[in-house]
Image (cartoon, rainbow, N blue to C red; front, side, top):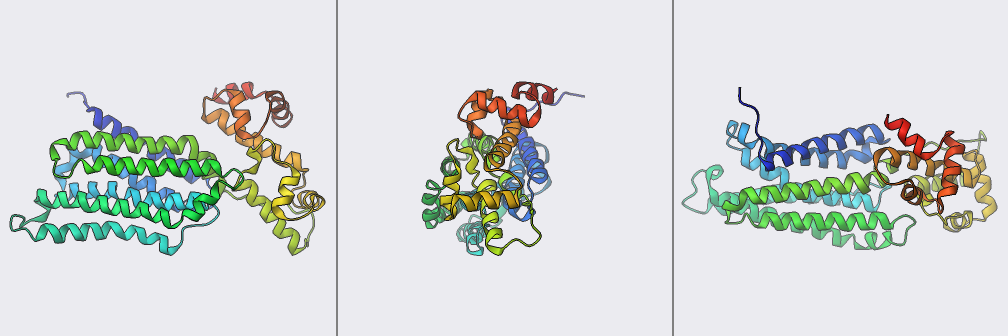
Length: 354
């Protein structure tokens, strides 16, 4: 039996399949609200399918005459889905509206338009076998992708507001990065219009672009998205707290879990009070009542939890990890880490990896 031999393109596609599977498992096990992770699950399932179809083309491509069409659909469904993911990142505490989901209709419209345009030609009796039909598919797919990205313009107010939010800059730059990745993808696909001899090169480029999207997810998105979706239950010290205090506690939970305000080393009780529009004394009382902690304890516990995850999932040095989670000095990070875990960050990383 001859050993399996994969081309570079197939190897890259196979890497993409495994990366998407990893992300799907990660999101399923780490997110606390299934409804909030529906979009990323669908997106990475579709992206993983696209990688798989590229990888398996030479092995199972002859099983169905619709293989090329399925491949087209999996790749060009990416931009509309990523637009919905981008919108959810921008308003991470809410899901996209039903109007936003209309962007998905662009793909069936692109397919219908291609069938209509290619069907007008006398040389195309069987569309699925017609090169002109696939040229039109690439054209209408590019138009659909560009139109879906234009939907982001209708939400420009939401994205500009990100820069003003606590811990919103990271989401803002992630959104920009994802938009750029989609633009590069559409650029790579434009090469296929009337130039099928470059199909293999274009496939490699789009695979690399897909892998770069996954890289953004594993380096940036995991810090804010799905952990930010796992809403914790606040602790109540009193049996019947006032509705006003409950509302304040929910707002504090949102600022901690969604905006991750504690990643700012200078974030203080006065900053929190100003955002809530109440006196600092009220903030201290509500935190003690609902969370059974002081303000510094509340922030430091969450910082250390994020630090533990970064120590295990990245190879960043400890000083960088400390800065990422909101500590302004390495000694204070080491001290708090030891108080809460019983050991140093370096020993924690070493022991847990073992």
